Length: 315
Image (cartoon, rainbow, N blue to C red):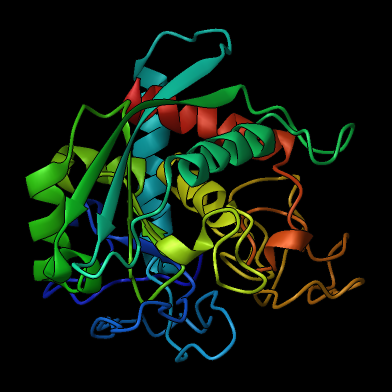
């Protein structure tokens, strides 16, 4: 959910040629008794957002904010792929989820089946537009829990953010293809991070989202424990940028019905307006950095973009 979270990868330059590279939600304060090492995050010169994080977390930049220098190439590639495909009517998509519970040897992070079910229910509510009827879009995406895998591994639990740690965890456990959403709950130093759909072909075993275990519904992270981190990160997985991507530029986040926004949001400040163009900052949008309690919508334009990205890269 946050700024370009380019975790400590040696070649952490976001580009189509790079392939998969984790995009993250704002850093979350680790909630386990033994926090893992902090992620090494490389930020492009035009990145300025602090990652979405709970109180007390160390300020870092997020791995899911894309450098503006990369956006044009991404957009050209998606347009070319869509142009090469026969136009298809929009259709409902059900995404199978493999949920990986990664936990420590002392049991920290071993979230319950009921918490996992609540997480999937939250995602389905959010993607169906049920939190703001008449305002939020029904994106026509839904999620179904295909399997739960449990992994007791202190290294995987506490070090999912380094390049080596992320690769070790994911390559040993990833399941399915481009249409399967792998979710790993860990002690990440972020609230979460994701891979974008255009990265899949370059490194399919890294595909999916990592979330902080304390962000699940009922978790211990104040203001970020309603399960909406997973909704935010799966938005990246389906091709959405942050709402503040591009700032006050004409194209901003490449979605016409999300008002331009210069800075990420902290909390839920009613009336926040950081650009001179029409519309207040979309603080209630799942792709901003607001508190979970502030989130309540994807827009029709975001739904369309996710459908396009699905057709171009995952269908």
